Length: 321
Image (cartoon, rainbow, N blue to C red; front, side, top):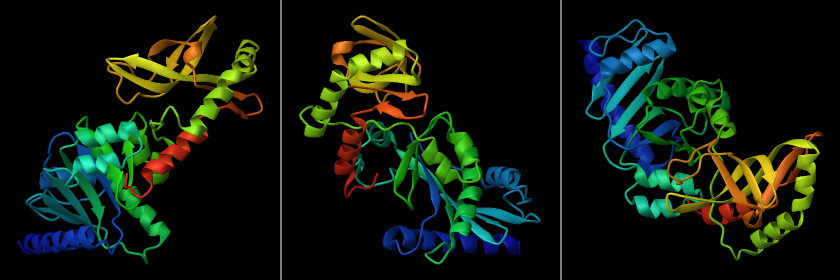
């Protein structure tokens, strides 16, 4: 059919444009990229059905045109035409970068670095025709449409979501699906971002000062906790499991003498079976920070937060995450 021939031509043109964008980086690449454990492929018929459902459109069946557009595939790329827009769906059976290890070394967040090293392939949902003249409202609309399609293609095979336009990566968590379906998926991803895990040297001057302040102020934390003078009482301490140790925030459930009991306040990077909410106990002598929110909404404590943020900026300077 004529539409199919046109679709193939459009797909080949999209392939050419895509590679020019990746190589020359002259245009904005508005895209959601999934870094995955194993390669995936997409059947045009399945894409037509999925995209048609999320966008409430008739996109045909992958072999014929629908009332609102069509889907056509050439090798590892599929093109979707809908509402006067062209979308490119890629699926590549190789890592996102040529040297994964070199790229990983520039990632400050230990969790993201570990997940990045594990990926073996990637797929993406791209907007075609976006450049510097495209308005913020149109860019948001592109992301909104892409996010609703992208989320339908995700499963347990996905390790990270990467945004080429901002060079930011997001681990998959329990809020990811909701974020991608929201009216502003980029903002929602940022707001639901899993807490970063950043390595800071023990002899880092800022960290040493912060830890000393936290330990000197420990009696203040205990007094506030026992007096119920706020909420979200947390401590940060080293937790060891499965041969690995991480400094991690713990939501406090009780303080008993020289030990603190609680639950992990975020998912660890590499602590075996431990996860968000796992019950742990740590020695008071090993704590390196504490914090809580008083009833006026003010953060008290959190002495190491600034030191960690500065360390992350130092490690991430000049590197694409």
